[in-house]
Image (cartoon, rainbow, N blue to C red; front, side, top):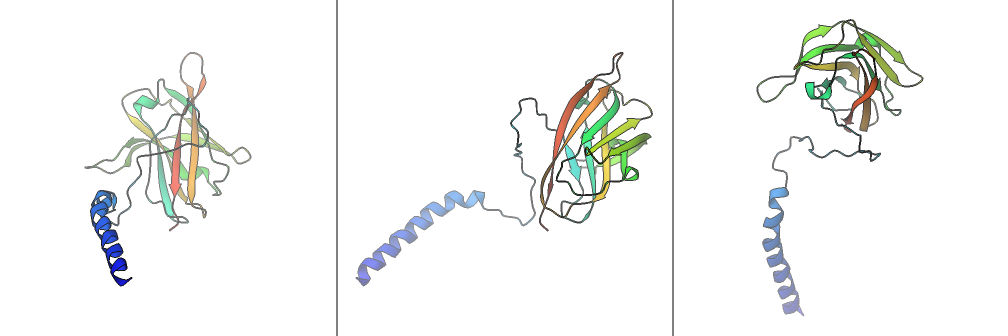
Length: 190
């Protein structure tokens, strides 16, 4: 009996040493969190367009600065108005003075994300419909520059994913409102 157990444990130990190296590349070697390259959406819609964003921190109840980017590829025409639909479960009071519109430098390996020039704009918040309307004093042009709507706020208490949708009114001869895209913001437990 003792000999059979000994053979059993040796075989399992041998299998462990043979199979473990296959999983080793997937083992996280650093304790730093890495942004996932995979994003999902709740409602499968072929017209969904993912927009880029950046936030300073993803911890719940922390002071945060969120940049919602509008790259040149996101804007086919100039924009007279930007309309943002907030998620219904985003339980955080947003004040108009904490929302800005700016021409932005999107950070990367050598630079940080920061506003280069503030664009004067009127901000209206509709709390009943969870919508924010931003009216720049001059239309946002459809040039090679990137622009961002910046929120300075405190993160919600509930962790999870929050999806913001944006719509824009074109600055052509006939102003037409159209869907620009969506951002999915993540708030962590810690």
